[in-house]
Length: 286
Image (cartoon, rainbow, N blue to C red; front, side, top):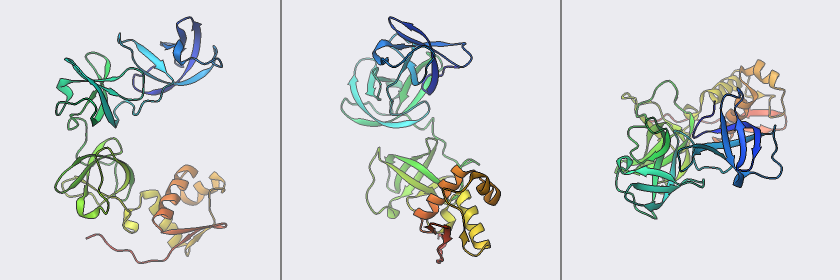
């Protein structure tokens, strides 16, 4: 199925004067990639990664351009034009993203930047933007986010308490101002760590790991294994994936990510013969 607002790998089915027609795996839908995005190397039968959006006549089209964000994500966009219908933002593709007045938290101004959410309007079947973020963000934690997890952040609001951040393109979280050593700005991206979930299920974020309690679950599993076997594991990024799965019950990809987090938090040392636990005191969060 060809989805608006998403990257997809589609197969070239026809080469026509107006461009290439691409089909999905089931050959049930077809979309045009205009001639301006076609290179000499592209031919019928090739599979091409494209982004699909609406053209000015609301027809789906494919492009090899790289948008700043995809469906249901957030980005810091520049307003290029404001007219009687609304605002139009540069989002990395040829056709600007429309933000109608009804979707604007405050009236947008040409030349200014705003945090924008991209969604598919069900009535018009168009991709549109909104700066009214409250209706899209989740403010309470569920089982998909855990204490210690490393998450991508986007700063979207500054308050007296601190910085409101979009967590993993889904949740709203808060970084307290007294825990930030250099001021953040709206639109800034960063990495953060989920603090223990509050009793009211709201999410607080730290910009740095705080001892072992702020490490994501797979990293915690590696720490527990290290402590159980005396502090050393003869595993590294060259180890056979089957051995890693047998020893730790996780894929090599998850192992490498967890080891990277442990290394950045100075919990382990990386040596030629494997990973080694760094013995240190851990402080509990107050």
